[in-house]
Length: 133
Length: 134
Image 1 (tube, rainbow over the protein chains, first blue to last red):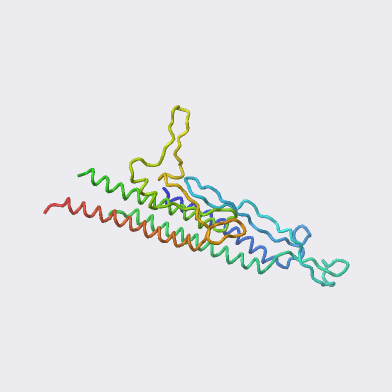
Image 2 (cartoon, chains in turn yellow, green; image 1 turned 180 degrees about the horizontal axis):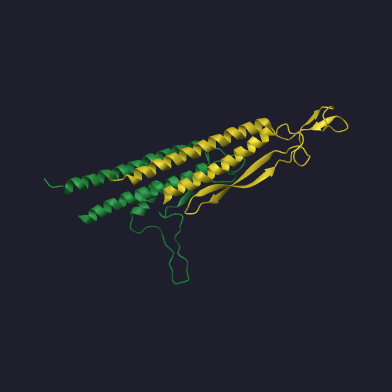
């Protein structure tokens, strides 16, 4: 049943996009977290998408990894901060807020697109089920 | 007469199958709009329907021994060849999905599917009215 596969495909995309939105939320929330769980400044997390064949045909999406951005964090001069080094500079997280906002909008649009796909598939299936009535 | 009904219904069945398959392919494209290196794919509906309607069908592999695997692909029941879309704007991550094109094609395909369903309904109605007495 091809039309049922559409649900699997769009569903995998919804899962992947919400994982991406999750990462964005985490990054934005920690945009100013000078000290993370490991004592180091928070590092931005990015999800990696890969195409995945869906059982029965079609290609879905899968999050293969959540990678940490290794770009150097921005530094800020704040000698009063307890996390400041001997010169008075504090290393802040490497979260790029603008990039994260763009990522968020992109993820939300992609999510909406896939919801639309599911809705259309649902309508078509319902019409098929009432065929001949 | 019943053979004629069968042939007519079969044509609509093939058309619906192909539309459903194309819907699946387009859903894959939309789902992978952000996947690096994913290449958008589609089928040539007209050629696929002509291929399905002709009695020969797609070329099959000959099985000359019982151990041979069948040549048919399980993912594509219609035998329609999947083709890659020509990209209009290249992106740095190697993805060739143009979301507007895909959404338009998806909507168009959904309407065509509904049209095929309407044809079948109408066809059945005709048969029914022919079967009724008076």
